Length: 350
Image (cartoon, rainbow, N blue to C red; front, side):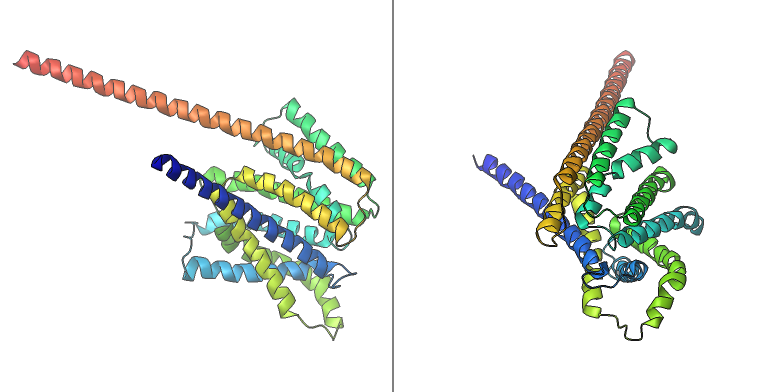
């Protein structure tokens, strides 16, 4: 009885911790998205400088990541040569900077709810680019699922009350660059046995992003900011906003490390619905029935895709365990044969 009670208590503790990590990640992800919208939207804080905002985030994250890795030694840095850094990390940094720039720019033109609906295209982009780079195998069933997600997003776009072509182009561009970044991580880093957690990823990638963003900032936003003589950086607003962005990366580290990437995907769906509800009820964005119908269709497609990925991971895991058990059985059998032959030799010697 005592053992059973202890086991139940341990399982309960694990479940509570898992849900706590999920709740923290949802809250921080929610906060970063709404906070960015508040800062960038001309009708709210009215600071429409997405490159500057992203640079502030990258400078803040670079500094804190350096402190955690080099000074506090919370995590160990990855052994990386300069050649590998140039050929692998810098291209990923370029893609990440473009993705962040465009996604933050979209908040100026589109509602939070519609942006979340467009983000449902991420699995479509990742799968398509994965097939192009031969990291994914083409399957008719999976492609049909991707088409259903795309149709759902198209219906949601058709029903959008405040449709803005510029905003849609920016968000779709952000999705494309982010999907390419995820595939490039597989090709340039994972395939070489290099694994970066969110903290080490910021440590290596954030400085690259800062350098890449500096170029468009000098030509696009810096002249405008200089014209505004009254411009002053609000450290309370931008400091807390940057801290939320960094804390989100720590939450990803905890969530994926203590649960799984699939849990994060499922939590992401919950977060999207919460953001749509918040956008409609608090920000007073218009969410039409056609919007919801389209996103519901896309949501079902994404859910089915995540389910298929989970089944594939389980099958791979089962196959690995079967191979390991077969190898172990073979090793034990060989040991028994050696013992038996050794025993016979001893008998003949006697």
